[in-house]
Image 1: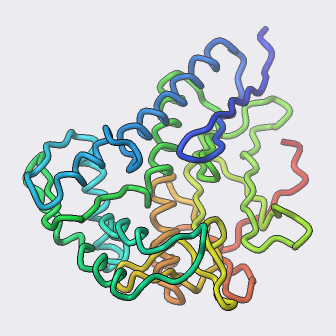
Image 2 (image 1 turned 120 degrees about the horizontal axis):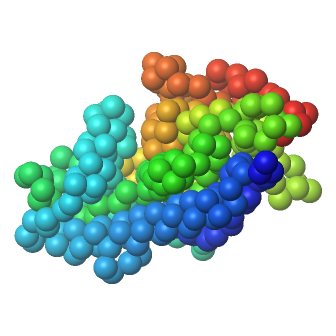
Length: 315
């Protein structure tokens, strides 16, 4: 009789520490599955990274204001999803807004020049993206397309799909905090318990680099968090984070973080980001989407549909 075990594989991708963890009895199968999942994450990073000259995204951006670019079915599907998010968010989730990052330096800090920001805002607008069948064109020179709003989350879903196709039934994919849970724990001593996942506190105590806001039991689906604490700078007592409103070019300034549990990680991450962009109206909007969420208000208090805490579980 084969013995149950847990294997965990760590790797770097998408500027994040990532991991794939599995419960199973066939170590050889688990290692093959991990290789396939990691390869899928790297494939997506290579294909869609805005930092790679040979990526689909860079090819589209280089042709901005020029000819249309032929895209494949996968890319067309991601653009379809981006269009759905744009409509769902009343234009707040805009895959052309990544160009605004050129006005902000979150390493050095400092506010952007108004003229610089205004010039970039003129290049933002999902409605300026032209599509015809499998062709896409950015209408204005200098426009940019960016799937960063859900790219890592999409990679988490694809990695989980690779594990499932390999025959894995119990796994947790973690791409820099964006999670996809595939089935409950498999170890006999876990008694079919859900996986325990932690949500990072956006304002940990001064003496701690990291602190847990909540420990959540998740049996299946995607969990993603959007917040103002990973890339930001302080200026005259005000926090400026990397999540930018496509209407103004300025960072959001209401929620400290929003975590969403949905059927898949791509959806969870997109909904969390839209809630951040909607500010005070974000909680009511999340309630209308019928998803479980946990948000941290400006005063640091967690609000929303409470997740049950299962700290102390054996697994």
